[in-house]
Image: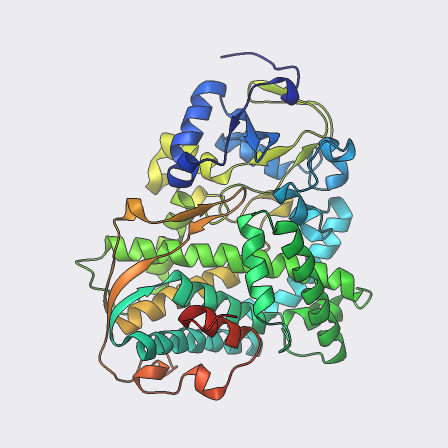
Length: 455
């Protein structure tokens, strides 16, 4: 096929976010590629956008910041008032922070975040060692809480009862959440990523909460990323800093949580009869994470880009300011078609590429969190198997993220005894669970959400 369409708005488009897409996005990507080539016009929740499907085309878009802009002031449909006011994807894109900046402004803001985060991803620093120990402790406490509630043999959802609370515990520590940032911000961050009808309201509430976090850390600086950003750039206002930690906490939590779940699924389904090896080596988990990043990237479709000028991409001519969605999941499908999963596993784009790729410190920290989270499950579980066939597990497939809604398993914990890794046994297997120490704020909210007694 070789043609050039006059405009995105003039083309017939099929809806992207359908029941079929939830269950099997790969089939949707393949059909679009067969119909249109490596770039396809689609309907995204009522708005036409260009979906970039080809690996090389996605890579070109991500690497060329002169042609492909992130700043929403380049967004023609928004400037012309053609977006529905209640369009769910709009809310997060209108939060002006590093992710939606270009050029020198973007590089300066990115450096501030990188400087603040770097000490926490380096295992040689006190911050890095203490954070890793905290992640081990949180994971053990969650397994202990599970044992206390359901017993050493039973059923669990490794999303609701392990991964999501683990990530919010980590994020609350990493960004210095005060005690009064509680259950509401936990729920709002999740609602944002699902891009539901209440996304705009959730965005407003979460931003207000993060501004309170910024003010708290300014008044009481601590060993956290928010305080580190203030030290790196004292000119940041509470509102600016709140927007930055809002976006970074949101995407660190979601992308890393999705990667944990996908890696756990890969571990469970590739094991021998539900038997888990004790604490896989860092190298083995690294290989698993690479494979998972290729097959199930935690951020399936990236946030919007806008061409600075008319440009040819695939079989189409895109106009300046068109709405463009680079699809990492579709690009990986394209890559595997030609090179196979093994050859392609190190070329995946799960953490992005180009000037806006995930900062090195954030990528390294996410890898560490995934390795610890998966390793602690293997350490404490003697057996675990999914209660549903892998092709029947529920996925959430919003406009950006793709992750498991739940990972229900039948498990058997190992006998009580000292745990390797320096953290001791999980709480209910010989220690004292976090709840016994009376956690407040997000940690108390998370325990209520795991085991009931919700507001």
